[in-house]
Structure formats: structure tokens, C-alpha cells
Image (cartoon, rainbow, N blue to C red):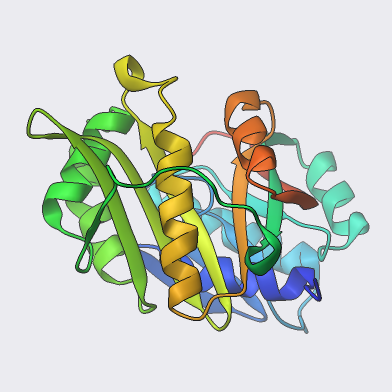
Length: 252
């Protein structure tokens, strides 16, 4: 596969909008009331003209105003010297993540997907079910996250599995160029171990292939062995990893 890290980083930015953003000298500051690290962090996407000693305190002041930690995403595209500067400012590493990729055309997708339903758009029912699966109770998150999903500008493949009239499994594919990103794979605890996550992933990949996707990518937390083993068994391969540097200073 001919894939580069910058492409995947761009695709993931397109795929998962934040509640609000600010562009700052080649950096994008993302704000989502600390819903996830990805949607509440600083990412470097262009050339910088200002010195780090000026830019880092500026970001810290902005995130302090939001009442959330200052977080920087550190991918292989970010200077090792910058990472060292953050370390010296008492930023700790959190949420190391593995990015995996797949050549869909070469993949052997054999799982049955008859039980997986495909929705038009991203229904509110699906979002509410995702809240329940993730145990999302914060009222601010429950208010803003639906708008974040509705703000996804790319074509989506929104899938679910229902049992007894309830959604017990979710998945979301996001199409961009000839890629499909695999997101929001969750199965209710009492239904795990039945092959539902595999069926959800397979259906997303099948739908993506029908819509012109030739490659797929996903992101999985390092240490989530169950998910990692599933994705590896589907044919996904390690591509690169990233992590977040999080300020340990008080935000109040």
C-alpha cells in the first residue's frame, strides 16, 4: 500500500470534528470540553513562524480559559525537540495509540454481517446508544457531542446491531478520498465474545469498498489487546503510533 502518515493525520482531522477550533500559526487548537484527547488538543498541521516559547504559553492560556488541560498530540510528524520541551514543562504522556491500516482489496472479509444494520446519516438514536455504551453521563458532553457527529462533512457508514429493540453494538465508517476510517466500535459488555465487533467492522469495510474505498485505517489505544487482536485478525497492520502530552498544571 502507498500510504503516508500525513495523509492519515489529515483524514483523521476531517473525520472527527471538534466542538470548536482555533487556527494559530500552523497549529490547530481543538476544544470539546475534554470529551476526548483527540478533540481537545493541539495538532501541528502546517509551518510555524513563531517560536515555541511564545506559542506554548499562549495555548496554555487558552485551554485554561476553557477549564481543560492543555494537550498536545505528538505524532511522528512532530519534532522530537518539541516533545522534549513539553517533557521539561511537566507534560506527561497519556493515551498512546496505534494507527493501523488495511488494503481492503486484499483483505479476506469472511464474517457474516446479516445482523448488522446500516442507517442513513447518523441518527440521534445511534448517538444516544453510543452514550450508553460508553457510559457518557456528563451533561455538557451529551449536549455538544451530537453536534460534533452532525458536523462530519464526509460521507458516513453508520452501523449498529440491535437486540430486543435496543442498540447493543455500534460502528462508524467515514469515507474520504479512497479511504474509510473505522470509528466508534463498541459492543455492550453482556454481548461481547459473540463476534459482533467483527461483524460490525466487516460491514463497514464492505460498505466502504462498495462506495469506492480501497484502503482503511483505524486507531486503537495501546494496551487494548482485545480490540488490537480483532483488528489484526481482520488484516490491519501497524503503521505508526502517537501519544498525547498533557499538562499536569492546574487549569483553574
